[in-house]
Amino acid sequence: AEIIKVERPKIGDDTRRYAPPYIQKKKGEDSDIAAYFTSCNRNKQSIALNFTKPAGQAVIKELLKDSDVLIENFKTGTLDKYGLGYEQLKEEFPGLIYCSITGFGHTGPYKERPAYDMLIQAMGGSMSITGVPDGEPMKMGLSMFDLTAGLHGVIGILAALNDRHHTGLGQHVDISMLDVSVALLQNQGMNYL
Image (cartoon, rainbow, N blue to C red; front, side, top):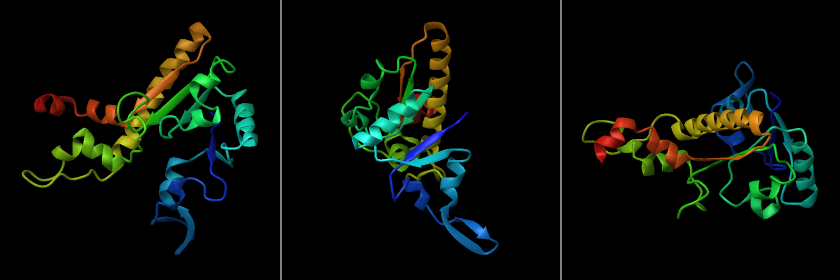
């Protein structure tokens, strides 16, 4: 697959600065690129684009003419402000699979809130079952729900692509990190209830 990542002009993706560790230029000499960023963005092309301006929005729409899938992870409603929400694009691009990965989904009382993995670990309950018995809640050593929300997004995208083979139509795949975190509690969540 050809993947084009859209980043903010001049500063790029926040994860470019999630360091140390950095990728090394040569043995013993760090570059200014975070190892985390490179691990999450292998084989992607990246463009700097200001989609808050009409010219940037036009570039996005030009790219969508040849795209099967758009994946976004902004707070709910962010892309709607710029004419790039699913409801705004589905008429012009009826076959587009539009995947949104947010902290709390596109409906409900927290839909407009931002989220990071540690917050979702706490709210979803996984911190309460991680660590030592009778100890304080503890976060996992990796960004579990950033990763698994992405995996759930891929599952939804694959299902939507399969459906498109039959209907010719795309759809909106709405993934909530909180939903994913609660689902992954499995029997631990049931034990709590």
